[in-house]
Image (tube, rainbow, N blue to C red; front, side, top):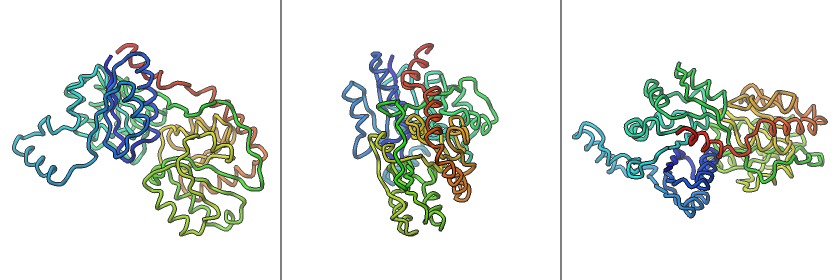
Length: 380
């Protein structure tokens, strides 16, 4: 089978949303399928794409932006022709590759539906031969054209969501249920699934804030501002921000603005995730939107207390007070109150971490990339 993978990620060269399609592509390669990867062009090619290329995958790149004269020329051509010619479509090489199945990864549910170039190609040439993987959904990202989004999803072979919350929210937003909507998990990027003992408390609670530096999604700025309060300034607590992203400079400025250099550290991206949990006692996530975050499942697997907002799939994994803590919304007041509640139960953190580990091991798919490719190839 010829399989084309399309990533719609354009805010960074790589992110958590890419891990599932990459693991799926590796499994497909092992099974002998031919692969083509369609991604945006970046100055530095991500290592995992380089590895797939070495294994024989074709890699097609498209521009993230075009010079103004090219856009002006396109408008003139479209006006004269009455429609956009195929040769101007950045996804036209899909026709040249002619895949048996296309797997599109959307960072948010309606990225493909809102992309007229991609959705036109899929609907016109590949009905029933494409699968969409939605990595996140949120109340404030609505489809630009509901009937078009419904048409796109109905014509797909399958539409996967990474949480039941995201799937039900899509049904609500579209006022329509499509029977090909299914659930899939993201891969856990740990070398070992063993629980790690809680680090000894040296008088300071070390909190890991793991996620892309993108405050509109992840809300790290709220956690920083929360510390600008006497109760937290005086507390023996430290925040360690792990990740990378466009808002790193702003987060550094915010730390300086509040004078919190002794309380918050920008740690950057950590390739070896388990090392985070050699130091940190808990995970904090003040997200505005999520699918089901990789960092949550990873923290649960290693047996850490997770204090996270009630968004996306978080409450499908965390039972408040039983194996972690759920914050009702991404606000300074609500998160502060829940963190105080969690710290008041500090003596229970070892037991809560064990419960989190047990939940994760019971629910977790150890190889969702293989699951994805098997569910597509079984009847396609």
